[in-house]
Image (tube, helix red, strand yellow):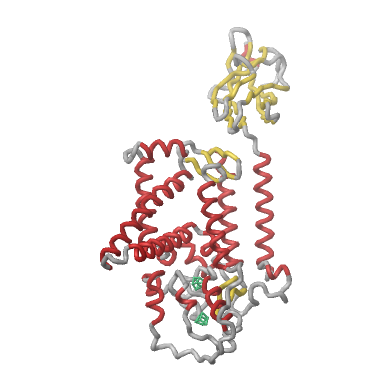
Length: 470
Ligand code: SF4
Ligand code: SF4
């Protein structure tokens, strides 16, 4: 569906887009066009346009990106082996729930791509947000220097511009690398290693490398990352279909005035009029605004639109049914929505059933039993207690269905501090003649206070054979 990578435009992305695309392609026939009279030369875009929406969303995404690790909304603390998700603190031994949470996020991202094309790339992706921000910053610094140092030679102004841009991007890279690594390392530990200029430990080296990569990315690579490295862009060809939202040029009246504003505003350096399926196109809608601004002066609507596939209706078409307007355009999409709903429900149920204090008790069968001097029979068990919550807890052990039973612990109420793990062996004993069977079923109950949860373990108590007792 998507065309081959346009390497010329990818290499010359962003700043040189105007130069490369303004050159006429001798192989292409000239587009036929009509002459249009200017009707409203003061035409302005409506207040709420795609460009403005992107700017607002970019700001929101930046704030979310910076906040997520600091409020433990989503973070993978590698040294402590903890995964924080939606306010829950998951331990690495809860791998299944971590795995299914990650799969859910991946599934939602894939479903969004199928329904709405590359809206993630154009509106939400941090790489795109910071690439555009660095280009805007560069342009602002250039304008400032040209305005205030006009008497300096062009070469001097270029050097001043370069030094200023690199200095600001250097500071920004340190900050962004700090935020990025905060997703994997506790921020206080990270801050300590930053202020001590640690480039010796694994954390320090990782920090320095990420800072350098961030700087190189936003100073030199920018949107070229999307067309050369990012696998998500390449996946679009597989994920999209005939009903996926695309940005498309439609000119049935052949009234394009060849102003090329749609090309000049494109950060990816492409001409949307060639195809809606160019791999560089991130569906940002900047060309939609650009064309609307131009064609508005001629009293016409934009020739570049968001549309549901190449032949589908335009986005926001009033004649479409409400479910079609939100992208539910075939059975496949309804199924995807239903799966997301069921998956999310199952995940929330799993989270709600999760106990913050883990209690696990199992028999240790290295020895089946021990006959004590006190004429009691002992079986050994191993318990694992882990407090994954934020408050201290107490686990009370009770043994049911065994006569005159004793637990060989100082107390059957075990205190557990927040974050603490206890792994311990203990014995359960009964009088030697109290049971007649060799294998006796019983249960151990772990009551957790103050959480109020209860874990019950069905186990077996082994007694010696009659002849062994004698
Ligand atoms: S062609 Fe239009 S929608 Fe695609 S990347 Fe360029 S400006 Fe954005
Ligand atoms: S902005 Fe619109 S009118 Fe101008 S070249 Fe692009 S499609 Fe044609």
